[in-house]
Image (tube, rainbow, N blue to C red):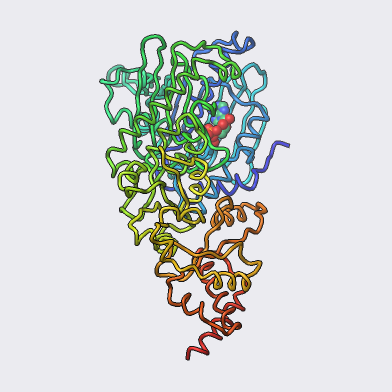
Length: 621
Ligand code: ADP
Ligand code: MG
């Protein structure tokens, strides 16, 4: 059996590629060259660390050939190659998670963008944008058998033994109608210069030039084989900073990440002295698609003395900095490091720690430009807050870099700015959490804070709920949640405690009515316009947190809220004097239920709620 079926998802992907991706088809060449370069990287690394590979003669090169007559293009490398299993795994199944994610993303955004294809690790298939038949002739290093994989991209592929003189891979494309325009020297040169100029290994273009020899009848047409090198192949990060232009940095970034937008921030460090190393980091303009996938790809590649070592080392930068793309290149690490050694290497650790500091410093500089920093923050606040949560070493710096919405200013506010606006006797930083930032502003929980001019941070991001209590304080100021009972500390002035006319009997009566629905009924110091509100006990998760836990499928225990009553409110005052027990019970419940609704909680029985309202309406009319 030589025929194999593509797995369902691969098929869907191919359908999408053939039928929907019409823009930017030229990226197929970038993807194939990038694969060739990866294959050379992998083999080169093996020759350094593995005895068995040391015997191999390695003169890495990527050769591109085209033929305008037969309408073909081939991309050839002498890299690691693939065996039968590799071919089946890599070019036919969904073993790699990229395929499914790419499809999901395309469906979600309802768009087809050829540019994204490389970012999801499904770049190979992009060749079906321009080809109606593709052959992959390959031989894995140290093996004797070669294989030919071929497909027209329609459901199946063929896999047969083949012969290839040595290790490496050749991808041969029979171009379709749309792809024919690429079978010429100018196109290929332009595309390679555009996307692949910084590929480390020489990319050579092979072509024929026709010339005429002789005179008259003797005149002969001679086709001469030529080759030209297409890329610079210099390690851009090693060139002196002053020589490099923004455009060069940006082009390099794009070839590294397959992003088609310029990076947001470029951070280039060339350290000399005791340890020599270079780091070149980029922060993208947009958060990468896979930022929140569990299995995201690390963005930083490690080189040692300009030799590629790995792009899958997740620990080079902390996980929360996973949006940073770029290169670390060390002069002093041993070339033949194994993974295990690498992970324990003190020097590398030092480089990595310094890199994190450097990135944070640059962000701090950036934050002086509020408008620009806001753009960064809007894209990357999530991972930055993850850092705040988990990276104890850098917490202080990160606390200066976080931004929140607030009741007292437009846009984003820093904690320093909040503290600068604090009232004289204020002891805490107040914040309110909830699922919707816009509604937060209208929450009755904020009434007294507003009346007293106390600023409250508005936190509508799920992660805030987890991060902020964990961090606990900024400088000497504790974070206090307005959603919690404790949050009214600065609201209770002596004057208040005197004037607030606690009606013990009212509280007791309400407690009796609401019985097991509430943990407690108390006098509120945080309300002015509303009669009642819901808060949670200091140690309990907030209402919003409880619903997050529920959506995560966690069995959060049913926690009872605390009902707070505004004794100065006309309704409450009248309620206090009400003798009709039935009406008292209905109104007591309604106070409780309206407070629940405003908090975004579900009420136990909407039917009973409506019935109560109707009873009251009936009486009022
Ligand atoms: P990615 O390069 O992001 O992994 P691709 O779809 O571009 O995704 O390639 C899929 C896989 O196919 C690669 O990871 C690699 O294992 C294999 N592959 C593709 N081209 C080559 C090649 N020229 N040499 C060796 N392996 C290759
Ligand atoms: Mg690839």
